[in-house]
Image (cartoon, rainbow, N blue to C red):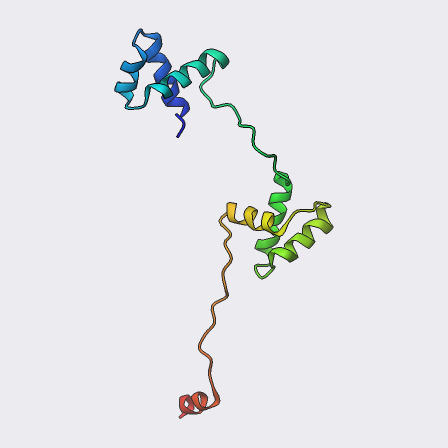
Length: 130
């Protein structure tokens, strides 16, 4: 768990006012190692915001993500494979089906099965009419 920019600013202010690292850690109820890391980040960058990590780059752009979501919202019965074909045809972007599912899950568009009513048999209909 990383510190928020507000917590980091408060932490640096306490350190610059003369408190020691273990005193700041005890006052803010965080580990001394976290205090040290935030201080070193502030001294190195002059800011409180965490630097971006070195993770794998996304294979889709924000525009591709919006296209996937809007395609799913326009026709809720499209499968991920059909959305993949639409994306490839419209945007010339080749992505896997699992990527399509991940992008939809990020936007809280989870797969649902359509609700069905009771299955009426002929004897049920006759009993209902009577």
